[in-house]
Amino acid sequence: MEPQNNRVPANLNQAGPDEMEIDLIELLYHFLSKWYWLLAGLLIGAVAAGAYTYYRITPKFTATAKLYMVSNSSDTIVDLSDFNIGNSLSSDYRELIRVRPVLEEVIEEEELPYTYEQLRNMITISTINDTRILQISATSTSPNEAMTIANALADKATEEIPVLMDTTKPNIAERAIVPTQKSSPSMQRNTLLGGLIGFLIVAAILTVFFLMDDTMSTAEDVQKKLGIMPLTIIPESEMQGKKSGDGTKVKKQRRRKRR
Image (tube, rainbow, N blue to C red; front, side, top):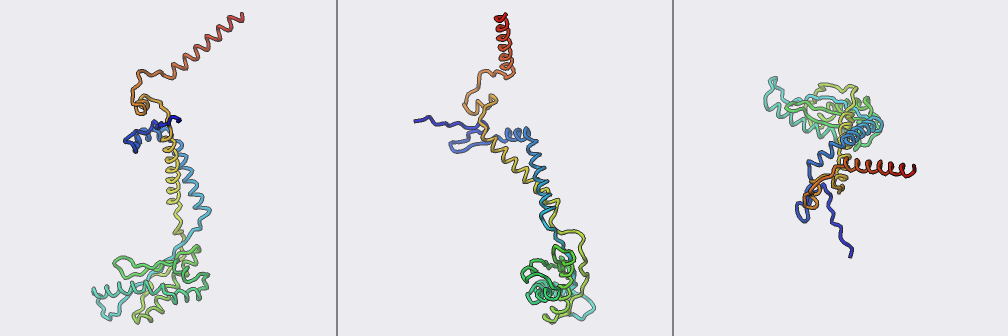
C-alpha cells in the first residue's frame, strides 16, 4: 500500500475533522501584496463593460404625456369625494389604455411595426402619488417614435375611453416632446458594475491560489501544519552568502592549481 498524502495547505487552519478555517488576516495581506492584479481586474472589467455598453447596446428613449383626471361632479368646490373618484378613475384608465382595441388602433393609425404584445411592453402607465395626474410613458429606440406613441395614447385616453366609461374626459396636462436624453442603458452604472465584476473575479482567482499554496515560509506556518515550533531559522540571505563564499574559494583553489 502506498502511504497516503495528507498534506494540508499552510494557509488553512484545522478547525475539526471535516472543517477547515481560513486565516482571513493572511488572505487580506495576500490581497494587498497582489493589489496590482486586483486593480487590473477592476480596470479591465470597467473598460470592457463600458465599451460593450457604448458599441453593442442600442440606446432607448422615453417620452411622457400627462393627463389630469376630473370627476363627474358639477360642484365648483372640490371635496374629498372628488379626489377619491379621481383616483379611482386613474386606476381604471391605467388598465383601459392598455387593452387590445386601443393599442391596435394606435398601431394602425400610426403605422407602427409592432404587435399588440410588443407595444404593450413599450408603454408604462402610472399615477403620481397623491394626485389625479396620469403619466403615459412610451419607450423606443427612436425618440420621435416614443413621442408619437405617448401622444397617440393620450389622445385615445381623452377621446374613446370616456365614452366607454361614460364619464367626463380627462384633460391633457402635458403633451410628450422628443426626448433628448436616453433613458437606458446607463453608462455609469454598467461601467461600475463591470469594474466590480472584474475585481471579484480576480479576487476569487487569488483566493483559490492562496488556498492551494502549501509552502511553509514562516515559523508560524510550520507550527500550524506540523504542530511543532522550529528551534532556529536560517535566513535566506546567509545561505546565499555561504554559497557565494564557497564558490569564490573553489574558484581561487582552481586558479592556484592551474598556476
